[in-house]
Length: 275
Image (cartoon, rainbow, N blue to C red; front, side, top):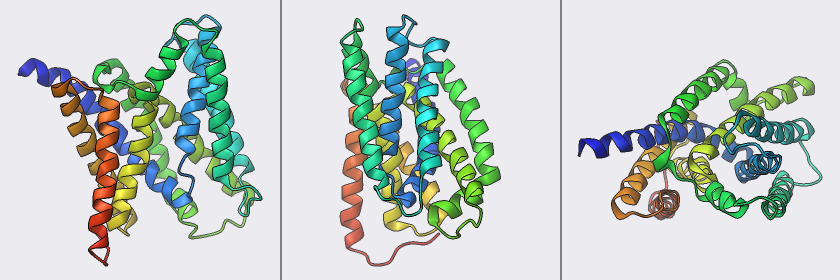
């Protein structure tokens, strides 16, 4: 029993960290209406990793991570700096094109790398059960730094996400957006290395969407997104460990079904809860 608890302590800790960060960013992303940006970023990160593998570097080496982060930050910086208030092409269309390009290029590179298709599968489904304390500690340090940045500039990020105010200085607004998206991209890349693309996407969107069904208060949305993500991850990890099934798909199914269940319950009530 104790051995099982010690084994599960690592994925539980990782899920708490990821649920908190992704729940926070998910609240912003839903407000900004760019739902699929994280899956596009994750795919670009995977493409960078494939390039590193093709160059002969080990999968989790510093060189591969550097290439992956470089690809991701360049794309997301371009997205932030070229964003317009009244775009000719919707942002979701651009995000979709980026995702398709990243996936197509990754598939082409996978043909040239031994075990490339297995890597793509692993990147998509993930395996949080086997995360190590070393990765968890690195997440704590990285997420802590990003958390401090968002504590300092959080009010401005929130106003931009909610469109509460229009910055008179467009350059300043783009600078804030750049900081927001760069920190978001770093969190996505790091989280994908721990849990995979599917898990990261569902943790970003499902808990935030569920909280938005019942909450109108910004802080309430973030808190409940975190709690919902923790419950979904924890239950999924226990089920996957007990039933010997894939943990990523198990968590995705639980959180996805939870959204639809609570959406149905929401239809029975007309007033949102404000805390």
